[in-house]
Amino acid sequence: MSNTLLEYKCPCCSGAINFDSEAQKLVCPYCNTEFDIEAITDFNEAEQDGANQEEPTWEEYTTESGSGDWQSGEELNVYTCSSCAGEIVADDTTSATLCPYCGSPVLLTGRLTGAFRPDYVIPFSISREEAMKSFNDFMKGKLLLPKDFKTKHTTAKLEGIYVPFWLYDCDTDSSLRYRATTVRRWSDSNYTYTKTSHFLLTRAGSLGFDKVPADASTKMDDIYMQAIEPYDYSKMIGFEMPYLTGFMAEKYDVDPTSASIVANERIKASTLGEFAKTTAGYATVTPQSANIKILNGKTGYALLPVWMINTTYNNETYTFAMNGQTGKFVGRLPISTKKCFGWFGIIAGAIAGIGAIISLLASLL
Image (cartoon, rainbow, N blue to C red; front, side):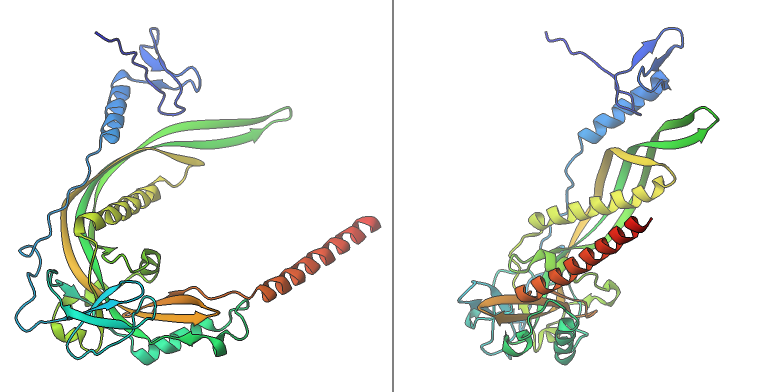
């Protein structure tokens, strides 16, 4: 038989607390806070519940829960990039093209098989001309961009591609605890006083989440895909083959169970952010425990529109992505080392000039 030492911690300062026989309460010797026995018991039980959270479970995505298999006449070609092995799909109207990920030629390898038919699609709203104009506008005003980038870079073919996303709907049931303080200061003729009050904040409630996206392609950069969010899901419609005409679609290679890990983190982060908004008015607020249960999880499969541009400059490839619905544009441009040193010299000179002026003023005072 093993003995377990049970120790209660102060919810305010985390110090060890003891039972005071005179007050008939638990008292913290460090911050002098008193607690009823029932309050500490409830607090410990809540802490234990938070430490033993169950992993969220999502309803399995199948052909029955989704829109089923590809229908007769919905035949798609599969293209494979010879350089990065990326796989894309397109309808019969698409001939040999360029890889939207690295700009290399892709080869037709066969018919698409063994893939879920999408439930939803958001059609492209941004034209090819508008996408290229956004790319040119993106380069304007970049002080550190090499002077010859606009004339010497080689732009691969601009590609419109439908990127696969898993979309997650769920509810959350949450209980959270925070340690908070308020500080009051005052003075008299002899001393300055500071009074710090400690509080235990409890919050509980439910939130609903609709269509939390998770990228279903390992070839697409998750940072880029999140950076071009959000999409307007009110414009999302049931998938039909004609929307793919003139565009390509990525073949998903991340299953909904694996992608749900990303969705779980986004849901939990959003939940923490919403509850944190309810703790305003304190000098400090420190999260202590959070028990977030994800309930009624359902999964959908959608194709979302993205314009991709790959540009080569000085033998290095630069990738840009644009939300094909809203026009939000992201990417990484090269930086001129010469311009960096030039701006550093200007800033250093300005700082030195300011220092000299301050020194001169100080000598005159």
